[in-house]
Each structure stands twice: as C-alpha cells, then as structure tokens.
Length: 237
Image 1 (cartoon, one colour):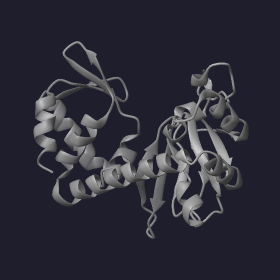
Image 2 (cartoon, helix red, strand yellow):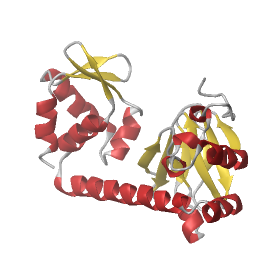
Image 3 (cartoon, rainbow, N blue to C red):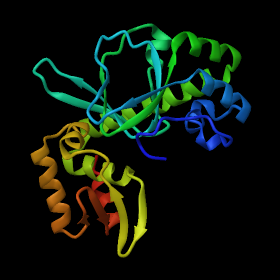
Image 4 (cartoon, rainbow, N blue to C red):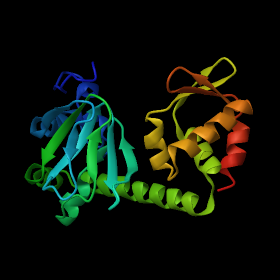
C-alpha cells in the first residue's frame, strides 16, 4: 500500500486502519470493522497542516500511513517539536476528555493518510466498547511517562546524552558491523525534539562519527557500531 493510498476496509483485519491502533486492538475483527465504518479518511500532502493551535478540532485522528509532527510555537516564533506520530499513533484524545481546543499544531512530515473520528461517534464507541477508554488512558499514561523521562533528560543531561538516548530508541535492523537506523526527521526537527540547536546536533553527530561509534548511511541513515558507547553516554543523563 502506498503512503498516499486511502485506508479501505478489506477482508483481513491488518488492512483496517483501526487494527493498527492499540486502543482498538482489544476488539474482535467484526467489532473493528464496525469501528472502521465510522472512520472518515483524510489524505495529507507533505507539509500540510492538520489543525492549528486553538482550532476547534473535535476529532480523534489516527495515523494510517506516513508521519505527523506535533509541535508548539513560542511567542518569539521558535517551533518546538513535542512528538512525532507514526502509523498507529493517535492524537485528539485530550479534546475528547476535556473539551478543550488543542494547544499545539499538527503537520504532516510526509504524504500521509489518517482515519478521523468525530467525537459524537467516539462517544458512541466508548459506550459500546468501554475497553477503548481503558486502552486510551493506558496510552496517555505511557505518553506522560515518556514526557517525564524526557524532561528529566533535559534537566540533568547534556546534548550528547540526549542524542545517544534518542539514537538508542530508534528501531534498528542488523547489518554488517552494526545496527542500521533511520532518522525519521530532518535535523532541525530532531534538534527541536532534543531541545538543542541544529548546529549543536550536527557537532555531536560528527563527534560520534569521528569516534567510530556510528557511520553515515545515505541521507538520513546511520549504522551504530558501538552500542555500549551510546549506552554509556545516555547513562550520563
């Protein structure tokens, strides 16, 4: 399935947009099909804004393909990346639970497709399937835990340790001489996520390459040769 293809309901549950989402994975296939009937597909071009701060976005948005950046912009115009949604991730639960408009921006980092649920439909779903609320709360709790860990790293660690921890968190695949990872964001966005500048991030990556801990592989690829060295740097946080 291409990244710009709209999600469709087919015979197999793995083709359902909702089947990718942890909050719906406790449902049977037939129940997932029922949920999928309520989903409204939306296609996004690279750089397209899903919604803006303060906008009345009373939707639960589930990423089907592509990636979506969640960010805030400071009063001086500096963008700070909060997190990046991958396929299966969702956003909009806070508005559903609190009734507040979003305090952030959501922007497609690449061509993407999403399944969206109106809140009146979501309210109907959680009444029919209470397990959805429990799984939603579990996901929000994990997100809060990740935010606390990130805050601790920002307060106690330097850029080197934060970068090491970030590289270790990326999905990798074995390759000759190490583990191959792909940077999912542009350097400026990774720098924002790690609360540093693009120049500082580039310096730290260059030091890792010069010390033989990593080597470059294509435009955004890296091969990690010394995991222990990264673990040691990350532990300094």
